Amino acid sequence: MGFIFLTEPFSRYLRQQGLRPQGSHDQRLDDWLEGRCGAGNRMDDVMGRWWRPSKVILRQNRDHRGFRYLAAELQSNGDLVFVGQDLGAGVSESFGCSEYEWQWTIKAADLPKLREALQTRKPVLAALKQRFAGDESVRLYAFLCASAVPFETFSRIGD
Image 1: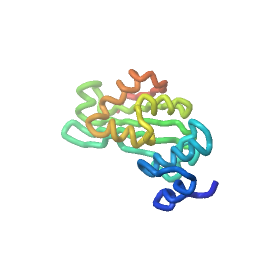
Image 2: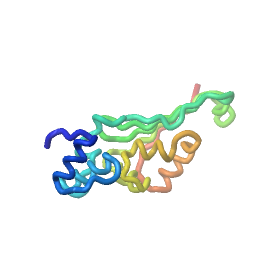
Image 3: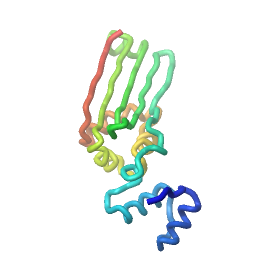
Image 4: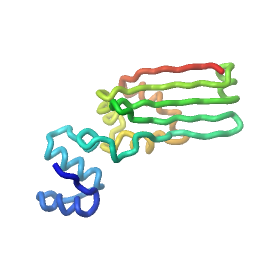
C-alpha cells in the first residue's frame, strides 16, 4: 500500500475505489483501512502513530496553592502512561509534604477497552484531551476505575 495524503487527493482516491467520502479525513481513512485490511484495523493500529502527537497535557497550572501537572503519553511499546505531579501548599495540606507524583499505565493490549469506555472512534489521546483537559482532569482516575480498564499504578509522596 502506498502513502495516501490525508487531503483532497485522499478523497479522490476513495471515490476511485467506489467509496463516498464522508466525515473527517481520519474517519475516512479508518473506514478505508478497515475495508482493506479487515475489521478492527484502524488507522492507529495499521499506520502507526508516527504522524500523530504521542503526548497530550491534560492539566498544567500554577496558583497560590502550588503546581499541578497531568499528561498522557503513548510509549514506543504502545502502552499509554499518565504522569502526574502536584507541588506546593495544596499537597502539604493533604499529605504533610510538598510533593506528590503518580503514574498510571494502561498496557497496549487494553487500549481498545479504553477507547470503548470513552465511546469514541477518535485517537485515544484526542479523546482524552477533549474529555479530561483542565478542571475535568480530576475525574480521570474515577473514570478509569469505573470503566474497568486495567491499569497499573505507582505513586510517591515526599519532599
